[in-house]
Image 1: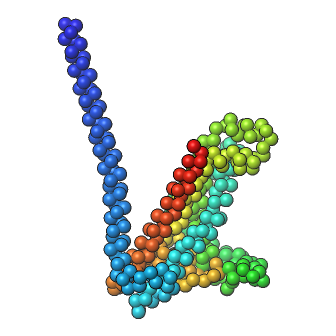
Image 2: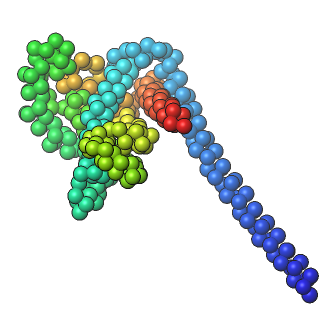
Image 3: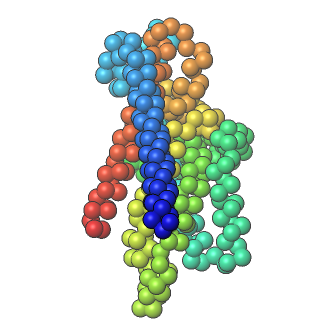
Amino acid sequence: MEAQAVRQTVKDRARALAGIALADRLFHATTRAAAVIVLVILGGVIVSLVHGSLPAMRAFGFGFLTSQAWNPVTDNFGALPAIYGTVVTSAIAMLIAVPVGLGIATFLTELCPHPLRRPIGVAIELLAGIPSIIYGVWGLFVFAPFVQTWVQPQLISLFGDVPVLSSLFAGPPYGIGMLTASFILAIMVLPFIASISRDVFATVPPVLKEAATGIGCTTWEMMRYVVLPYTRVGVIGGVMLALGRALGETMAVTFVIGNAHKVSPSLLAPGTTISATIANEFTEAVGDIYTSALIELGLILFVITFIVLAIARYMLMRIERNAA
């Protein structure tokens, strides 16, 4: 009887192990299929963009990247103004949003009274949930008039006699333009930087902060020499996530950038971005060349985003390798 009981126990255990092994194989196959599906979708996007861009590539070649022309009547198109506007507005937005976002995260984790930390944190995160078209409407009817009345005239008068800055802040105060679009983008990406930075700052072991405080470090010195080095991978990831959002933003920028296909040295002048150009003109595109030019703009934006993410990944790899 004891031998029979032992054999039955062995059989039950074998069946249980077989079931666990089967579930593990199914889980492995499911997760691998999910990863393959993502790669297939990404490959399909690339193939469709390249295929749709072929007529424009044949017609304009690499000159498409350096031309400022945009004339649907004569089927003459160039991507330089859109590329320029995309890069400039995103760069200015990050210059504004990164220090402000890190400052907000520092305040919430180190300086803010505890009863106010959660309400302020929730309010910042709610900014990320506001639809972009709401930002665009607010920017057009509220923020752009404010910039036109109070900000741009001051910048023009302040930097009018400075050699380089006079070109950056030249022209009549339209209200709309690349600078206004940059401010709107900065407001839109600010929640991503602030929220992610706050979360990674909270992962710093308290003993490190206490040690820095114990040797007489100020809050700035503690953040500079302890918190930021410890959390730099997460901070860079949050910044790159925000940059990706800024590069691809469409509706909010379309409302306030002016949608002018030209390259102007002045940040106050109207301009355009790749996403704004596609959103404005895709429904009106007639003819193969016109449609193909817009699709090639999408391909260019895809390449720019890929390059940015690749640079971010390389930076993170170097940081992790140096830390190891």
